[in-house]
Image (cartoon, rainbow, N blue to C red):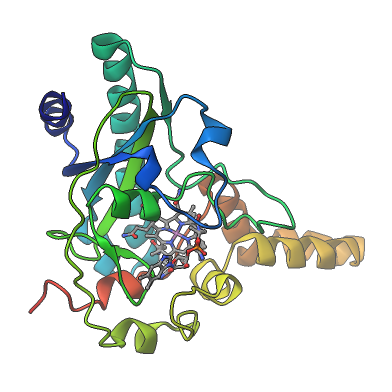
Length: 253
Ligand code: B12
């Protein structure tokens, strides 16, 4: 069955696939898979190589490459889920690639219901690096993941080989110093730098707005800062930094 599913996944254009038994998925801070899908038995994880947009200094181009990829990956996720329903009469739930996320004071919008990095690791699609990203055997740090939960009984693929050499280049090049502590990405440090028009800026803008005079409010809305916030509002999480991906030397040597 794994062979046939893999052939389908290759046919729809995903770059790699891995399988994991639900019992091999361990994400300490995320809810249990059973609380989401009581009949879950396995995860099928898809890997997609990043486009080279992430190397551009032009942040519209850099992030638009990611948007293209996320859209395609979501499409693949949906196609795979429907295929499993039709061909194997399976029960299937897709995993959010990035959002929706639970927005609460407890999670701070930073804990996925299913952690795709831990899923990818369990499915043999890579191992965690010093930058806390999963490094894929062929696509190195330039990879994003998608996946589905199923009630199909599928065994885990063998674990991938460790690839990070702890060279610390990702730590040095992180402009927000978000990787200073091993095994932890400082959420606020990363977001402050990588999402300049994210929720923090939005809150500050509207706080200032309510405290301003009518004339000041008019000026605030006519300012390019508001236009950028407005654009980010419908794009979603819009990243302006890709250093931990692009500076990683794994695979470049
Ligand atoms: C919320 C989120 C963020 C938040 C919070 C990150 C965080 N601390 O987890 C912020 C906004 C900071 C963020 C940033 C980025 N993200 Co993000 N993010 C997510 C999201 C939606 C949820 C992550 C989550 O649940 N975290 C909470 C739990 C899992 O973390 P944790 O239990 O505390 O585990 C952490 C540590 O313990 C450590 N860790 C755990 N086990 C091990 C084992 C070893 C050996 C080591 C060293 C470390 C380690 O790593 C974990 C992350 O810090 C996922 C999508 C998803 N559904 O999984 C994408 C995701 C993780 N993000 C991704 C990417 C690409 C990024 C960015 C590069 C953004 C960009 N420009 O593209 C940066 C990278 C920042 C970094 N180097 O850590 C990819 C990662 C792909 C990959 N190759 O690993 C994902 C999987 C999205 C996807 N669909 O592919 N992200």
